[in-house]
Amino acid sequence: MLPPARIEAECRRWGVDVVLQDKAGKWTRSAGAASLIHLG
Amino acid sequence: MKRRQCLVWGWGLFTVGLSNTLLANAWAADRAASAGKLVWRERALLGFGTTLWIKAAHENTDQLESALNAAVKAIRHVERQMSLFDADSALSQLNRTGRLAHADRDLLSVLRLSQQVGHSSAGSFDISMQPLWQLWSRATEEHRLPSKKEIERAQHMVNLRALELSSTSVRLNVQGAALSLNGVAQGYASDLARQALQKQGIRHALIDTGETSLLGRAPNASPWRLKIEDAIANPGKPEQVRAGSGPILQSDGRAMATSSDAHTIFSADRRHHHILDPRTGYSPQYWSSVTVLAPSCATADALTKVFFMLPPARIEAECRRCALLLMH
Image (cartoon, rainbow over all chains, first blue to last red; front, side, top):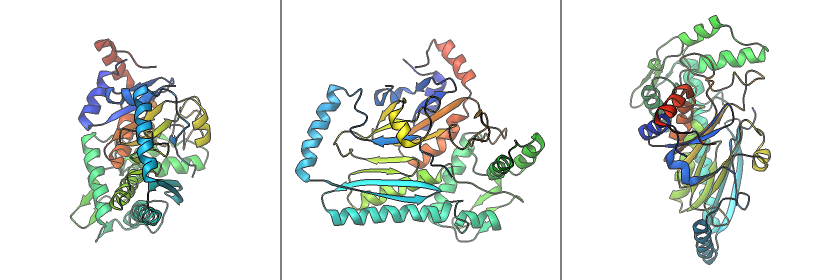
């Protein structure tokens, strides 16, 4: 699944990728991290 | 201070999810590595109030030991300059006296990077927030939360413009101002250790200073894989993180840094924790864990705090507008 647009914009701005976990425990990642992450 | 390790590493532990391509690559690399007879060595050391690890490989053990010594020396150098756990560090002296006439080159580099990230993030990363941290820390020792007035008073001393840098000197021009590089120094130490290893010909290594830099491949010749702590389901010691749930992140050569609300908490419900928004004086309530992948570990380290401040309400709105879904 695609990550939120805002995260993508921030990642592009800083030239990084991210993996985030929200307070409910849901994981989100930027597009560049998609091929690197395995959720188990 | 408790060990803050949100990323744990291993090999042979995290084998799930490997594609056929990765397995094929690992097999080819394994053959190449065995031909060169790589020897692995590791060092554990105490630094920045925690345990730091370096693991590296080389065919020549003398060269490997020499490289590990150089990496440890690099970390010790950063600690002497930037650690608040060391009362005699250059940073501790700066906070006491408000001035360093002849500042170290690496300290100046980290201060400049911190200024840049601070200004570019509109203050969501701010190394001048030490008075806020001290307030929260003191209040926690007294088994209470700081009052709103106390927070407002501390916030008056949080001002990145108080930091004046020249090519050789540092000055804090606001009474009571104090800096903390705890959000970036461990990443920088990891960068310097990585460079020290590379200079000595090391091609495969993991440097874990609390933030992680990587070179080449793991001892089993597959890409380095790190498990991110599940800050909700199983926060805890590295062995608990290894055994528990949490995504596995495969290295593509970039540094990785993680910040989490699961450690150094100021209230039992984890509503108040060590990551503070310099603009409000309180912990942001958006994320439990943020991992950043960046070419430099210092940058990754600093940016975990910037992403921690991104409000999910706005992100959710963006999601709905773009018909995107959060990954679960």
